[in-house]
Length: 86
Image 1 (cartoon, rainbow, N blue to C red):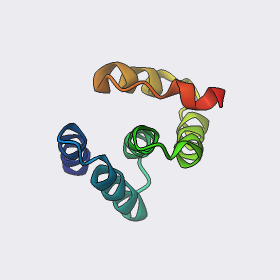
Image 2: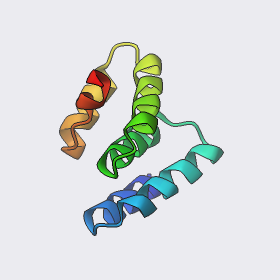
Image 3: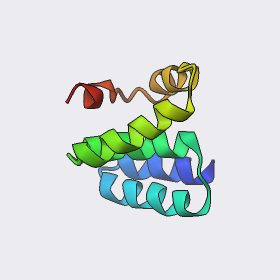
Image 4: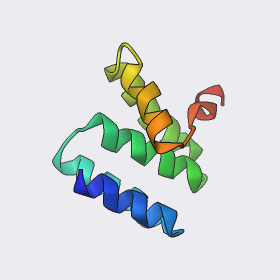
């Protein structure tokens, strides 16, 4: 969870690219849906829509009920569903 909080801190201070790199690095060590969701958010924020869409699809495939995805959207106040409409 420390990585996620550090990523959020980077994002909130305008260092979203660094936040995305941190999430990507963490995913190399551990496949975690919340980390992947955050990576998708950061990628969308920096305009890498294609990669954000890929990450978000992976999250949605593994979160079959969609409940985690919906909870994370509310908790992080980052809305990335528009990525799916592209």
